[in-house]
Amino acid sequence: MSLFEECIEALGENVHVLYDNSREKILSHFESSFPFSDWGQIEWKNLSSYAEVNTFDEIQSFLNQKMDEYNDVVYIIWDEGTLPIIQSTLDKVFEAIDDVTAVSFDTWIFSPSSGYVIEIFHDGEVKVGLK
Image (cartoon, rainbow, N blue to C red):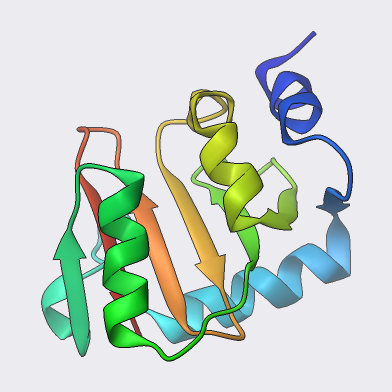
């Protein structure tokens, strides 16, 4: 079983795997919502609000402070361009985070409807921010 398949299994029910046009629409929305550096990391200084975090509680605290409410539906995007994008919920992603981040070097958890992103960069740096 591949790391991707293990991730899908760990996320459980109600996971949607997006290929082709659906994948491209989410990816395009993601890339137009946040500025990226040449090396593929979000340019955080260009966002209205962000924080470096160490725990999921800190992520939830940031989101709760910055937003009255936020959508739990998120998309998992990896730096490996051949991988599909996964739709799940933030809670499920947090529960299976080791499996999610094992799939590729860099991982983004993106909520287009709420306008936030969580970047888990390969150097161990984790940031959350709003567009």
